[in-house]
Amino acid sequence: MLSLSLYPCVNRFAPCASEPAMNIPIEAARQFYAEELQYLAHLKSHAVFTAFATVPRERFVGPGPWRVLGSGEFRMTEDADPRRVYHNVLIALDEAKGINNGQPSMWARFIDQLDVRANDRVLHLGCGTGYYTAILAEQIGADGKIVAVEIDLGVAERARIALAPWPQVTVVNGDGSSGPFEPADIVVVSAGATHPLPAWLGALKPRGKLLFPMTPDAGLGAMVLLTRRSEDNFAAQFMYGVQFISFSGARNPEEGRQLAAALHHDEGAAVKSLRCDVHEKEESCWLHGDRWCFSTQEPLPTDSAE
Image 1: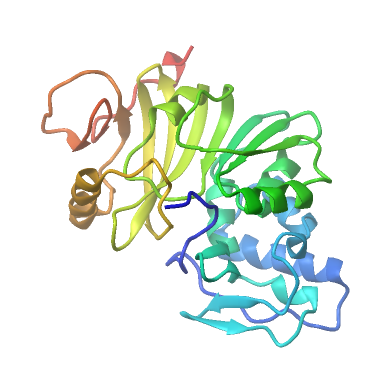
Image 2: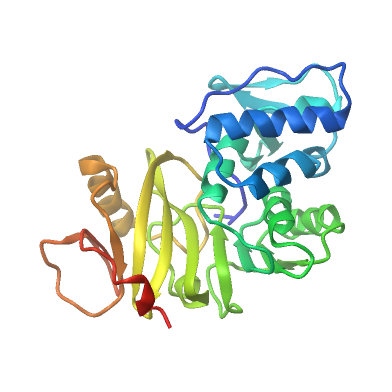
C-alpha cells in the first residue's frame, strides 16, 4: 500500500460545519474558518489558530469544484470559489487512490497538543500535498526546519510546488518507514501503523514528541502522542476514534489483530507509557510487541531525558 498523507475518515471529535459566507473576502473566510476550528477543536495555542487563519488551503487541494466529505457522504461543491474549502470537511484529492486532505478540526486538535515552538525541527512523514506541513511551518517560523517525506512521486511533486513559499520546508520523495532521520523535536505521521517504528522513535530528541495514528486493519484506531522521557521510555496518550489509510512498511497483521482487541477493551484509556526496554510480558503490559510495549505504568520523570 502507498504511504500517503491525510487519509482520515470523518472522526468523532467534531461535527462538520456549514458553508462559509460567499460574499466576504477570502482572508475573512480564512479567519472565520480558524475561529470555527478554535471552537470545534478547543484550541489553546494562538500560533495554531493563526496558522489556520493564514495558510491558503486552496493552494494544496487542486482546482475546484471539490469533492468534500461531510455528514457521512461525499458531495461536490457548488462551484470552484476558493472560499468553499474553508469549512470543516475532508477534501478528496484523488478519490480513486483514497487520497484526501484530512478533516481540519481533527488535525487542529492534534497539532495543538504538540506545543510546536519557534525554531523547532520537525519531521512530517506522509506529508501528502503539504497543507498540514504548511500549518506546522507557520508555527516554527523562518528559522525552524521541516523535512516532509512523501512516498508517491506525483504527490511529492505537488507538495514541493505548493510549499515553495515556505523555504524552511524540504520535501523528499521517499519511504517514511525507514531512516535514519535527522534528530527532530516533533515527528508527525499521517498514515496508520500497527506499531511504533524504531526509525520514528530514534529520530526524537530528548523530550521530543511523536504523533502517529495506530490503527487495526478494520474499525477505528487511535491517534497516539508520545513524549520521550529517556532512551527507552516515553509518556503515551491514546486518543481513540480515527481511521487512516495504512502506512507502507508500518503494518504487521498479527499486531493489528492484537491492537484491535486491546482497543475494543478500553480504547487505550489505561495506557500511560511506551516501554522499549527488554522485559517479559507482565500485568501492566497493555499491548506487548517486539522491542516495544504500551504499558499502564507511569512514564519516567521528565528529567530522565538527557
